[in-house]
Image (cartoon, rainbow over all chains, first blue to last red; front, side, top):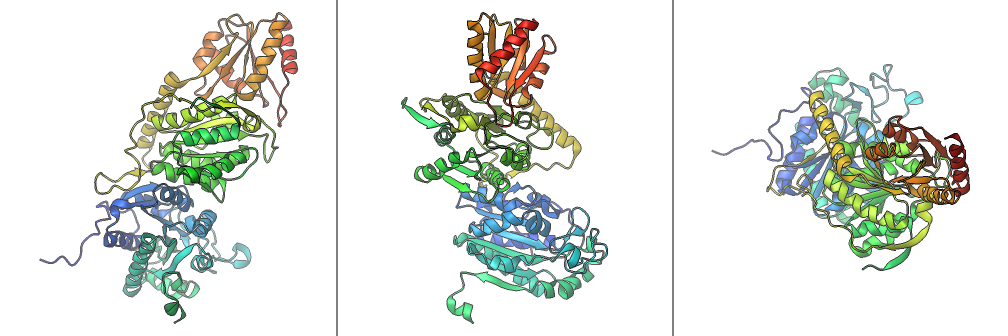
Length: 253
Length: 353
């Protein structure tokens, strides 16, 4: 009998705490599949953030370190510099990576730390119950922007992948979405590419995944996927923002 | 090996750290400790180590967390305002039960304060270096030789008890030069770091370094276990020095640079026929409580001398349990007390007895 579907080896058997319809499960799976594909579980150390993914250390079969809020790239720097031949990835949400940890993110990128950052952008604080995130889009209603995010009051969202593209230390930056099968398959390719960039010691790689939060957006999982497509992708266009591995010919095409 | 070299305190810590097998250093420039990281920036690349200047104190301590979690000997250093920034990371390191060495070359505060020597971070270091039920071991050297010796000791203590250890120095000790011998350091038996996150290689179960425990009973159990470890440290690792305490009517209690000035004041007092003595705690946490409690039966009163408005004095009071009066004399804001003004205070106390 041929197995056509099985759990990635790099994921544990523990049932996750994520809400029904949340795309964290897909993102975890894609990371685990990349680890399996490159057969690097035994050399990989994951760094869990503070936020919904704080329990990520329960779900991955590799060694895991839980970092203070926003500090995952600094913690990953320490792990990687201690053992440069290990694979190190962080798994961070938008509040963790783009608000409280902005400095750690930018400077780890600027140093060209040879780590992989998995960035879950769902435009909201999930763990604390639906507050405005640095990536909440203008007009988005959250518990701390109950009248919709008003740029004149709460300012503008950050476009992280575009920022990353300006930094010399970044080897690979891509924004993907988890709203449909085609995009999920693209996300899988992107994540594996990021780990390959790390394997080849090219520098910092970051994959931004536009994700859903049905619970705190207050919509059904299906409507949440529509929201990613209709509201988020127009504000956060998908694509490869930086790829130093592409040949000059490819890049100019 | 046992050759004396003339060295600044900050550099002696740096050199001793490398000799103790410290492979990584993460820091951020701040006066008066910057020359420590400058020394390492020069030396570590030549000796198989890494000195990395972080974007902030916050990042530096979290790099320490990562490198320690990976199983390496790692250190960071700073001065008072910078240590405040590190306190978040220190609490996580304690909560994760992993070792590291943190140096605080104290300057005056609060706020940006000044850049002259002070001892006003005593409370922070010994009582509240981070949120939660926690302490870390605090060692207080009083000369450059001791800065080197205690740095080596700090790495061992950190590994044995799986805790951060702080070297609490000050701007004077950091900047002054004295001869130092980096020769033989006692060799201690160290536990294996079987908890390290360095890749399981499919040879062991995965390791998790974590400080999150959602179940209150589990968190309570771990906090109790940690405080049992603190008790063990108190039983086995308390260090102090006594000078002329055997017949002292007035016992000065002072640590670090202040202890040296107090020692001179004790000599001056003795020359006048006043029986003064000096008790110098070397471990500030755990504090030598038992030893001071016993000393209280011999002396008439205690005088805590500090470069602060009075912080360690509280620990002296707690230690002697009101058996004898305890008072404080101190200068603050970066002002160093002179032996003469301490002598004046000793004379005043003598008149009160």
